[in-house]
Image (cartoon, rainbow, N blue to C red):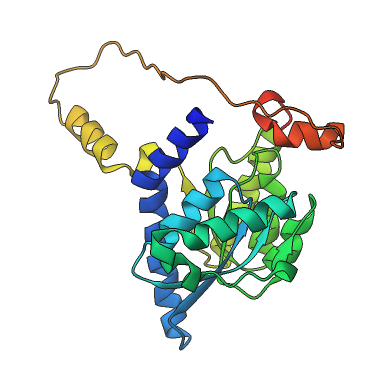
Length: 238
């Protein structure tokens, strides 16, 4: 849980905010052209990463509203959204309009959420599910912010890339939560290296120091599929 908390705090302070804000700003210009200044969005995946991206969007200057959500666990999703509404002194509650009948469960609930009239889809699910969710959102003509990783295998990556080409044909805005591409400190560091600030780079080592990954115990009523989905970090197909 500590690792999960650190991840959420990192996302709030770095690239998801930058990418989400940029995407929301771009969509806002389209919305204004259509005569409305409100950007409606749906959330696919109501865990820490999805809620973090949602909070980033709500912290932008745009007029945004969350109108639907999808998660395999609807009770957890409802509780998480209710808790989000209490944050920021209750100001987020004004930007959440998700009644119980617009919280969709099951592994195919994402379709019902994306079908809700909205401008933007936020996808923050395990990478094994993202290719088909991304593809469906593109087919529906939605702008998309999707967290990384985008897939768990080469087939999934190709599916995402094909959908990206379709999104270009539809003039859709797509952003991926790749923090190293957006975080100003990283961008500035790379620029200085390219400008020769430390001379010619002849060797480089990169380390990531973490505290391990989370694990959620199986409960008595959980199926094997439910257990694996709830512990997706531990299963290669997810």
